[in-house]
Image (cartoon, rainbow over all chains, first blue to last red; front, top):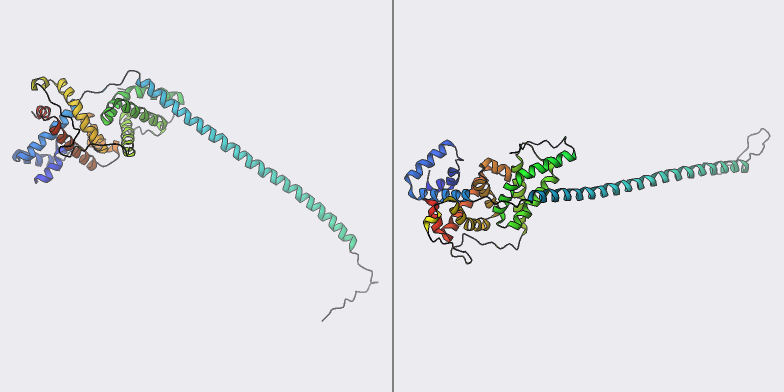
Length: 144
Length: 196
C-alpha cells in the first residue's frame, strides 16, 4: 500500500472499520512510515477529543414540552383533515343531489313527451281518414 | 433502557400516545445532545429537537421497528438539520481550510498541567471543537458526531443517513481532517495534550 491509499483509509483504520487484511496492511505501513504515523496519531486525537466532550443536558421540562407540541400539532393536522373530509362529503352529497334531480326531471319530461305523443297520434288519427274507394284500389298517378 | 421494539399498528390512540411519551422520556436527552453538537446553540438545538419529535409523532405509524427508536430520531434529526442548513442561504460559514482566516479565536492555556484531568480537558476543548464542528459541511458534521460523539458504527451511520458505508467513511475522514486542521490553528497547546 502506498501512502496516498493508506492516508485515505486512516480514519476507517482508527474505527476498525476495514477488513482484516486491510487492517494488517495499514498497521504494517504506519510502523515503517513516519508521516503516515503522525497523520494517524492526529486523527486519533480528534476522535479522542470528541469522545471526551461532556454531554449537554436538557432542562427538566423539555420532555413535557416536546410531547405537548407534538400532540397539539398532530391534533391541528387532524382537525384540518376533518374539515377537508367534511368538505369532500358535502361536495359529494351536492353532486349526488344534482344527479338525482336531473334524473327525476328527466322522467317527468319523458312522461310529458309520451303524453304529447299520444295527443299527437290521436290528432293524427283524426286528421287522416282514408276515403272509401268502394272496394277498388285507388289509382295513384305517378309522374315519370 | 426502554426497549425500542415497537409495534404501533394495533395500538389504540391512547396507547400510542402513552408509548410515545415513554419513548420521548428515554430519547430526548441523547437527542438534545446530538442537536447541540449539530447546531452549537441551545435555542436552535431545542427547536431542532422539537421539530424532530413532532415529525416522529406525525409519522409514528410508519416507524420501522427494526430500527431502534433513538436511531430513527437521529435519522429524522440529521435530515432536518441538513435541509435547514441548505435552506439557510444567508448562513455565513467560516472556512476552516483557509489559512490565516480572520475571526478565528485562539485558545491558550496557562498551565499544561491543568488539563491533564479529563473533565478539565473536555471543558477546554468544548469551545474550539464546537466551533470547528459548526464550520464543517453539514453532512461531514453529522457523520463525525454520530461516529465520535455517539459512538456508532459505519453501518449504523449509513442506515441513519441513508447512504453507503463508503460515503460515511469519506465524510468522517474529511470531517476529522478539517477538525484536526482547525485545532492545530486555534489551540495547538491543547491539541498537543491530546496527542500524548
